[in-house]
Length: 174
Image 1 (cartoon, rainbow, N blue to C red):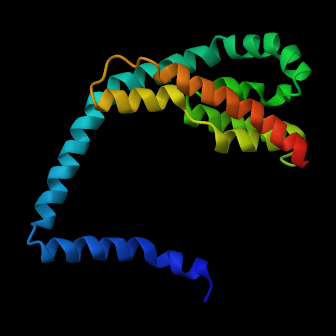
Image 2 (cartoon, one colour):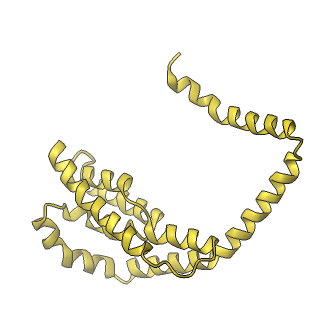
Image 3 (cartoon, one colour):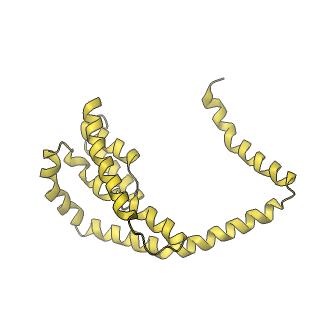
């Protein structure tokens, strides 16, 4: 039997382990589950305003044409650096929104072949970068932290590195 056949049993096994350990420790599993779900709902409601503001800003950014204008301005520099201009909109959206990045990624792949340089760079970028502002909004909103200090700068530096090295690594391995 190969490893893929065992993966079907991982989640049920984890659930069984949780239930058995709850019985062994004499914990009321159902009440703990309900309490945890209630706390999660409170956190979700607490971060909802930040998420709505972020999604609204992304929609306005794309609908205003600012994404296309910024892509047009940055394309010559990106080409000069060996970064495919077709993947530039993804590099601009990825730090802001995961769902927006996924839609942009689909647009990139439908415009060029997934096996093309731009398609491969976009694929590596999706796996090597993070939705910085979304993640910071969710985690800092959930923990009620208001000062991000160096978090945004460090995360954006990481994202820029991921974009640069995605193009370099695809170029080296292609």
